[in-house]
Image (cartoon, rainbow, N blue to C red):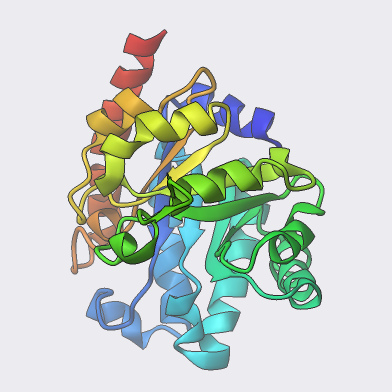
Length: 273
């Protein structure tokens, strides 16, 4: 999916909501555990109930790898279902990969060619030659971890290096990578006050913003500092939506929570026009 197509969906749906599919067998409704593939059954129900309210889905790959081959098959079925039934959805493999060049190429092939995700989250610590193999794929997006929402982000990301915070260095240097127009960045909603300076460095890039909802991020604050002319934001909510209910009405309750966020986003978009 191109950036232009993503922006088109945002405008069409009045939404820049991304729903995280962090599917945990310990948290899904118990009645689904009787299904042959409870992970996929849960995902399918969530997707069918919420697709009109969001523009992206983000499976966190760890929640699938944890269940071995069964989890990976459920992931494969989920992305195939999305691509066949809801091809307008932007798909994000939240895998946080990053390794030496030839290994990165294999990771890229796995997620971009075999599974056919639109984008993939990448840890930038190993630098240029570990990131550029992902950027080589046409109409695919590489989402670099810039400033994350976890408490430990302050251990390294905000420390100064040659007078500049490390996360700012990541942003600056990455703009020089080949095909950097395919870059997006992860910026946690709990770090919303940093967004103004981040936008000074990457004014046109899309930002994937986790941390709204269960982690306490504020949507209005994120939009105030992070939105650009193309909207430029994908706001992710995972637990707050998909685990809104543990009963047979889980999909309907997920849609209710997603609608609340989408309604708030629509108001923001209307006021920004």
